[in-house]
Length: 116
Length: 111
Image (cartoon, rainbow over all chains, first blue to last red; front, side, top):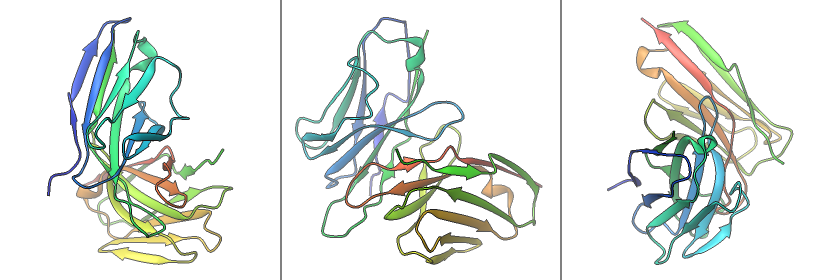
């Protein structure tokens, strides 16, 4: 079946501009995660949705970052007034829900954001 | 704050050699997941271990979860050039909570 997809694959923007990054999770997965990966680092958690609601947004670095998942499927990560320090690969992952204790996360290919 | 430390950070070996990479924490996790990531791609899940002391084998890869569920190791036997990549360990807590990742071990296998 189809995996997690992310668009665009690459985004170059000027400092101060607004950007939107899109994630299409695996069909039927109710949990969706956004992570950010800087060069030479592991992914760092940003925000996690269970259905339509943000269950945990404690990883968002500041109020320039916002994410939505209005219908419980596709999610959009929005960054306002971009800064050069926002340059990174933004990864999306999805996970099924159920009665098991631990759920594996499946990642998309990421969006490489470069702020010039 | 839960942290995972991976070692070594970089590893370059000849094809056919064996290697072990480590993932350590002072925190207890419900599960440990290992991923491999290649340039320009997202992490790909290799294995999940959930029971203290658990050992899982995936062809030439052997994964172990520490008895106290604070550490894990990945052993590769007879490495091949196709094993080259960034190996990430990630700790999970119960339910759908976000993963905590280590910084990864960058493995290069030379023919």
